[in-house]
Length: 286
Length: 240
Image (cartoon, rainbow over all chains, first blue to last red; front, top):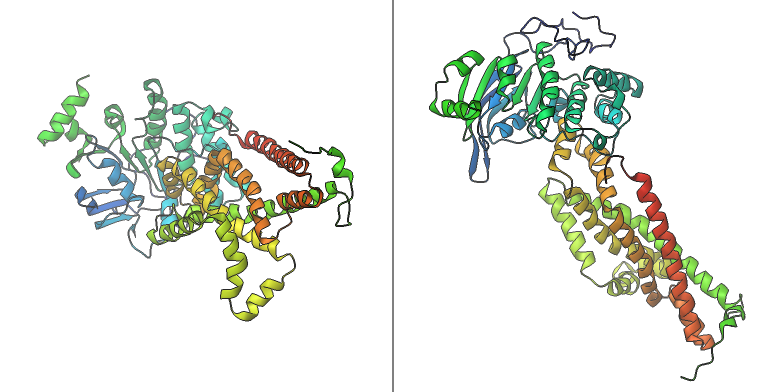
């Protein structure tokens, strides 16, 4: 494993090797992810079991079932309104659901006994519109939740935050404010902010959809590196290049249902459903 | 118009025997400022609390917040002043009512509470509007990182909402300052009350109210200047 200068999260459990061999992306020195415990092999990190959700009478999710194991990268795609963003927000209970069960590292998210803030602090999330806190400097954005949720001392939080900021190549911007950065830079800070919490899994909700085209690459580079470091990732995106490069599986959703849940090669090679074929032909023809 | 202008009236001793007419007006001004500042403290904190209630996910909390706002902004301030001062001591248990009536400076305390509660309903609406004007994702981002609801408000939503509503909040502060004049009806000797007694003692009505007007405008200009410094001080780099 890497010899990181950072005090990684300590745990009695031995670190479980990632699903794939760590490869050096060459983007930045060092790894974005510290090896850590959690998610024994074979037991899903995220288990989504027969989840259905309604907004009033309107059903947005119908009987969705899938599982993501440690180190797996799963891309969720589908036409707009297919429920993919809603599904990913159910994983950390940002959206409540009425039927079914989701467990994250063995913890049921809709159980009343679950300490949701604690669970959410272990699940990193990156949003379409970055959602950096505009009134806080980049450093403060990186340290707020570390200090208030994880109760890390200010110095330690700052060190961890600045280290991750360096890994996404933005050290020079530590004392700036979000409004002074480009969209791509803001999204990289948002990824670093989520990683600073040492999450066991990362959720990405269309992380490049709000970006100017020339900024998509820099964000995807960070995500590819993260995937190669062995992070468990669930990514809602239309970036099929990203899916081809690092995804283990692709989930295709339409009208609130998981229509196709296949390995990357199967999905791009021979999608079984007609709807997935149509979707692929539409987004890949340009 | 047959009117004897006398601008030196301010330097003449007032019949109260405690100084000149100018001293009388300045004493009124200090009561105005004391009442405005004290009631603003109630209005700001209570109003923020009620405004937050109206934005919480809990329907019960929203209803309590809405009930507060509709009660206190839909009854005229003058009526509220009378209710607090004349009616409340009568409906309370006799001993409490008697204690209230004998309180030294009772008009001041009553005015502070009344204005505080009234203005809180207006501050609450601005705080609510400020919070609701933020992107939904801000609350989600705070929640997703594991911040509790209280922490999300304290560290994410309110600091942004206050920055947005600072200009209308300044107006509200000025309104509150001018509304203190309503308290003359319950016997608070604030600036307008003092101008009126000066007019009654000296018959120099124009001088008295000219002075009161200038004092109100001056104090409001001080507030506006302070508010614009505050606005610049809390402005976030990289935003408009």
